Amino acid sequence: MSEPNSRPMYRIADLHESDRPRERLAALGPQALTNAELLAILLRVGVRGENAVDVGQRLLKEFGGLQGLHRAPFKQLMDQRGMGEAKASQIKAAIELGRRLTIESPEERPAINSPADAAALVQYEMSALEQEHLRVILLDRRNRALEIVEVYKGSVNSSQVRVGELFKEAIRANASAIIVTHNHPSGDPTPSPDDTAVTRAIVQAGKLLDIDVLDHLVIGQGKWVSLKERGLGFA
Image (cartoon, rainbow, N blue to C red; front, side, top):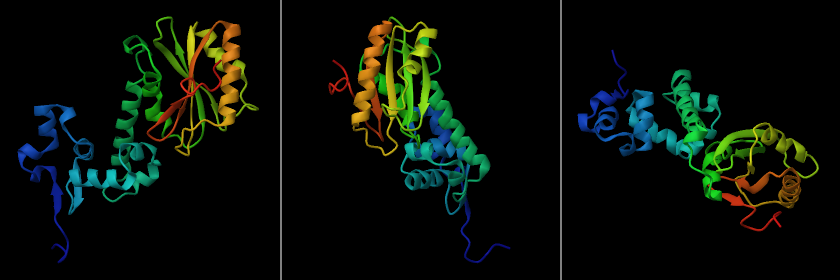
């Protein structure tokens, strides 16, 4: 017997066929669905009082959108009402597949012709990191990304960064140029004096090694800064 005040379980199947995310995806394509509807396809079922789309909307509101879901610790996501380990795993796996898609096939990527092109390669993941990471985008002669390598994890400052380490993988991959990137976990991408000092040393080393340093990007929450555009560290 049901509890007197309990609300019924709402399922996607209870929605009109034209409102069901899977049917809408098949008919219109994934680009036509909202973020909540895409999450609903992963979740499959809702909880009492909420269908899967409602749960998706609640998760997006709770975590502040897709970026928040990306940044959220696994256990925090798992502990949300209607989630559990399996559903949290599905969401995290889908987000990770999206991240890998952006870096998987160098030959299929467009050339990096602007700071915005470079930021698009790394911002999705690096804006979600809780510590500072310094990564280098290796480029071929046509400015196509060969690889993205992590050089440092932790505070990025002029006293700790060994400039030679940034070029080790570039030399191995026979890269013609590099773009340096690091994140500010605070979310504010404003370059610090140390960022400028590190950039100046990297640019000078690149000239000696005949490897162009095209830019140094600082990644924040939803925004980024190009040190080259601001004239910081580049002669």
